Image 1: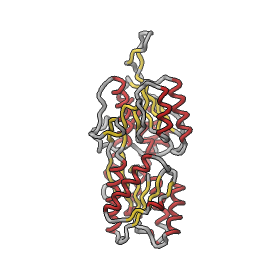
Image 2: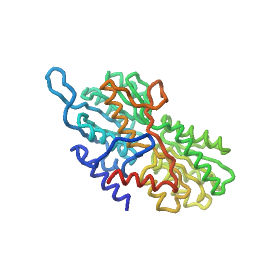
Image 3: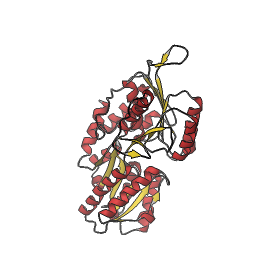
Image 4: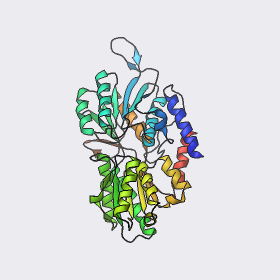
Length: 374
């Protein structure tokens, strides 16, 4: 099975990255290409631990005449999910290709573990042993306060941080991407015979900026296409598949007649919601929209006929990790930061791109993932 090979190779690469070995990884050739890397990489990395890569030396150490590698600290939202595992592999791939750079990658145990992540960032800033930071904040406001402790450059990853220390934001245009996914989902719902296009959002963590941007994109596109977005029925599932499944069961109880569209903050929650829909005849034609385009979701699209009514918006997490570290190095070296034409919160935006995935094009996504590990 393709997925089994991906899991095994992911484990090998993440275990070997600290030793500067593992699968070969090349620089991304474009924002819409080379979307990600492998399945279940985060599980191989382990919760709350740091993966490190890098050797050689290029930066002069003041006072002793010796040289050392540039040291980049990467703090992810979590390293306990498949998606964030892809980001980690992208970060480590940059260091593998650039031995003058040393990378440390860490993450909280869950996307709700805000205080845990803040403690990681605080500790790293106080140790003052890194030249630059790449941070995917769970609580941007608190991380911005912590960044007052440093004068080193910072790249915000996945979610913007409003701080003078932030040199750029690297991530997905979540509003635009979710809107594109919603338009495809509405089209699919019409094709499956739905006349009343009502949608309910199973969102991520309440107050999270990324979750809010995705919900905004979903709502605007669904309403523009003539549907009804039931905003008052939004459920916050804390990015947890178990909580999303429970939320879906509640929706089914409230609406036994069926709902045309269930739009979710990520694939893990969306696949859990779809599993509940398939148990109820009135929901077997419900279109479920996920986000991230992770390998396990694409595999189900290809191998399970029940996923004919599933759509996902594929981010490019491998590129996101790679490009964020590249931006941190460029900021340290005084070089221009690669960016799109957009500005986010007054700072350069490095757009890692997205694709809308259905059963029709899921094979291409999986094929790309497989090639990455070969």
